[in-house]
Amino acid sequence: MKKRAVAFLLGTVAALSVAGPAVAMDKVVKIGVLNDQSGLYADLAGTGSVLAAQMAVEDSGLTKKGWKIDIVSGDHQNKPDIGVNIARQWIDVDKVDVLADVPTSSVALAINNLAKEKNVVLLDSGAGTSDLTNKQCSPNTIHWTYDTYMLAHGTGTALTKSGGKTWFFLTADYAFGAALERDTTAAIKAASGKVVGGVKHPLNTSDFSSFLLQAQASKANVIGLANAGGDTVNAIKQASEFGIVSGGQKLAGLLMFISDIHALGLQAAKGLNLTSTFYWNLNDGTRAFSKRFQERIKTHAVPTMVQAGVYSSLMHYFKALDKLGGNPHDGAKVVAEMKSMPVIDPLFGKGKIEPNGRNIHDAYLFEVKSPAESKGAWDYYKLVATIPGDEAFTPLDKSTCSLLKK
Image 1 (cartoon, rainbow, N blue to C red):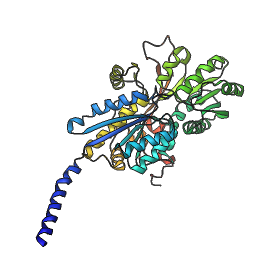
Image 2 (cartoon, rainbow, N blue to C red):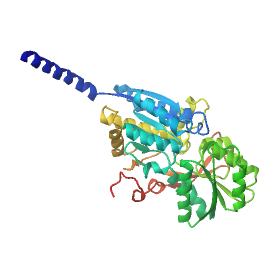
Image 3 (tube, one colour):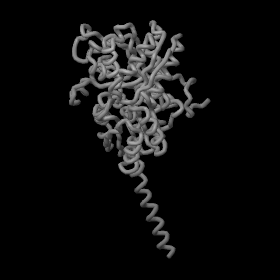
Image 4 (cartoon, rainbow, N blue to C red):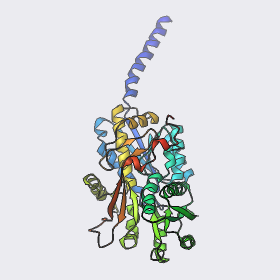
């Protein structure tokens, strides 16, 4: 009996010794791209973000090193409950390791909690709320492309300093709109401006007439559009019909994407100021990526900053996996590795990931060209100013993230 017991134990040890290296060399990873693929944010994220993820997988070189990388995608319809249900199914059943994109701040905040609970990675490129790296920060989340603090301290500060001393807000009634109005109000006051009023509108609004009449009646110098995508486009188009700009008030699209400018046309959008962290025609790196993207996207559109952010965040993620050598399933460990590495990126430039999960890189204040200034398709922006990354995003000493040592 003793010999049998010893033989059994030796067999068990042998089995473990064989299984050990197999576990150590686990190089299987699954990516879930979760966004709006059918609604007002489909153009700025949608299937373009899925393509950007596919390009990152191809460019990473990991498959040549023995990695197996799969991508799944889903439409959260801008609803937190739907987003969480999809993500939970992906994680529990499909074994997704990293969630990418996730626009719509209310959805992103819900997914942020789930990612921490399940110890997977959230690489958020699409959501704007600065709460992701402040009071809702997580060791599993990196906020990559932009946020409401950046938008406020770009467009909001610039317009206030250039004479827009009084503001009225049209604000999308969900987490993103609230955060953008909050952060822009702080920037306006810091620049000696004043907010004289505001009104909230439902997400995906088709008729802005009553809201625009209130803004017009306020006599504010600037009407701040604390919304995005189709809501911003509809508000600007209808403001033109009301003669708001011709009447002397200025519109501030606080979050605008190149897809929005394309939808509006340069005649309607000319002169608008906006803040972005990516523009396809900024430099050789952005042009090279955008050319490849355009050749593969059905619409032949250039990438938005959200889609570029999906690509860049995943490229940095893959560098961390390569450095770790395997085992991508401990999300907090992978994020910690990503934070330890400098960000060297052809689309957003050199950067760094702060302990609160905020990716720091330059931002740019642009002005939309007139039709006469544009030299060709998608030639929409002229650069007004470069905002260094350390000025564009929330300073660490002002962050309320619990991960920071006080």
